[in-house]
Image (cartoon, rainbow, N blue to C red; front, side):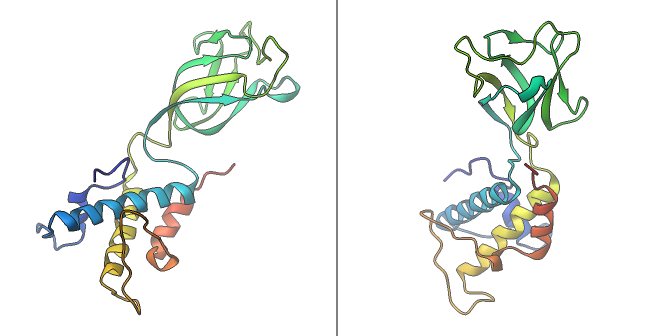
Length: 202
């Protein structure tokens, strides 16, 4: 298995699990299970924080803001915009029409129409206001996971790895690619604190 959008690599896990400057010895079967656990830990962090720590190129659709509000609140963390299309089909530009909020840092959580723009958030030709504004962009909290998120991923994966051998538990759990269940015991307190520190407030 190749880890998809994981917050740590197999080599990083092996280094993390051993004394400094040494390498954890595994076989191909071990490596596959460890990669599964790293990906499971990464997706667990996504679910609990409500955000992702890798860049995704996607198209998101939004409703027209109510009551003539110039600010369009986004449904996810935004890194960059490739194309922003208004409800009437007009393609808006950052030079003439809008600013990202916040202006100077990422991720962005809103788009604000400039006062000088000739455009305003508007409905489509049929009078629909729902899902008529489209944003093609790069989404995510960051293009690469922050160091503490990587550490959290490694801590959870290490805990899962211990559970494979029944360490600190009354029974041995079988972990397969078909399904890795992350229990509260698998999530160290420090890891939970890190994840909650990034929790996206809707």
